[in-house]
Length: 435
Image (cartoon, rainbow, N blue to C red):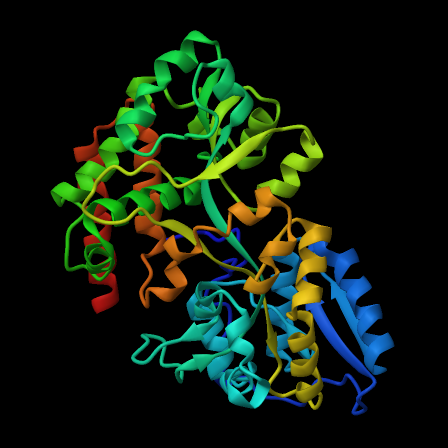
């Protein structure tokens, strides 16, 4: 359901991986250099520093090659897969089905054996939700052998944030964010009276709206019913989905939502919150680095989205932020695995977190990162992610649903109308798949 900030960028059914064949990539046959392709501009200096440390320690040179932005990187990986010339280590920016295609074509090394007893229980250093994003369970719909196929190097969660200084200004307790939706809405009057914006977020980007809507769907109807809806067994016109859509109407009518939120890109939302013009934000853990650059003195805290129901727990979107895969066809795959094991050890993960303000995938390193960053990881037990559900909603349905919420917010459509439009698109998609 999510167009992932945490680095599964959709580039579609771009090629028939099952019929790709060719020669091994020509990175040399010696063990002196391991080549890594990546797209992470903000992490490039830190990764290259770690490469120097690894070479000093082992004599093995790690060559990090940056290809940015992410769409250029995706094209690079696609072309390399077509020519069977992928590097020793790389990342896959796509949906779970794209990941599965690479695996089924023989381009990704299964790491299950390395993660277990033979490697000192490597898997135990990771947050389980981060590792799950890189794995496939029994009976998965992609036809991939169950196992672990990627190594998370950092994690992310998307949560609510509030400005502690503005809470004091409004006469609110800066240590007590709202716990339920009614309390949340009730703050709108004070916020408006103070001439401030309420909630800012990049809701001009549909995936951000869809993310919060998904959180509340889990809270109101539970995971089984959400997944049953994606499978086509429960309609979007179900009363529980009407309740989810109505939450956005309630936020707008209360005056809680920032003006122009439906056309706001996330960068604009981040600037507004960093400039202390808005009390709340809905954003991901990557914002710690963003806000630090915009306003180092900003005092804010993280909290779960206020629950709208007591039926089920509140959830957040979270899991692996960035992950690396080992090229199964590389003659240096053993060296590649050894490097990734070192890269995800406590010290290297703590350094990456300190240098880049991204949450470490190694749970033992959390105690060594800044408090505000660590706070994003405290709710990892509440995290869920489409890549571990086993099913995904189709892009056309997500688009109708997200644009429908935008229409609700600006008063053009009712929750019932949006639910009906979404269900019509869902039925169209189901009929297309049956053909």
